[in-house]
Length: 228
Figure (tube, rainbow, N blue to C red):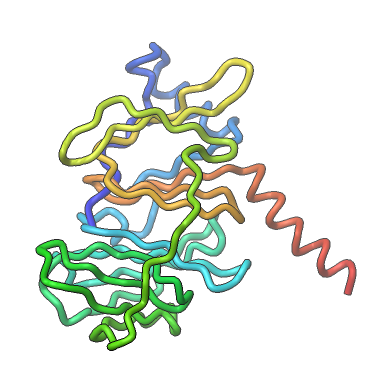
């Protein structure tokens, strides 16, 4: 998987705001951008693919396909403020593939980019994903309803090329704020429960957090406990 890219927290180069002030704005904003260097080291490595998987409202995992398909790095992204590497798994294959969520929630499809076929990624044990042969009864890809825009965050394409697109991260408002620029983005994944956006570029994984949505998500557990 190959993602994220030069995260320019100083998108100030475009709007004329010094780098330090841009970083300060990030802390005061409802939108928080965490570059690859703020995440566990495998998130900073070149990646060929990405898959976000959740089997419960409270739990979510992110899989980064690395080393041309031979390695999956598994991150627990259940809590956006505490993203953790929980496993690195050798897949037994040596060629890159696209990861596509299957209609059956415990599986994904690994579709080889050279057109040589597909395998099944078993996610029934999220920390220990397994690539297996595709069974005779094929699993069709899920039709995911991913919004073109994300609550609390706006993405604007600056440039588009064969190796991805450069994206401006904008915080909407009466006066929209340019928060950051992420370059050469090739994959995106969004977790609506927490309002977390994952962007994969040529320098690793960037995480864009909507702090208001996170707070609402956390409060929902407090409300549940108060009614027990």
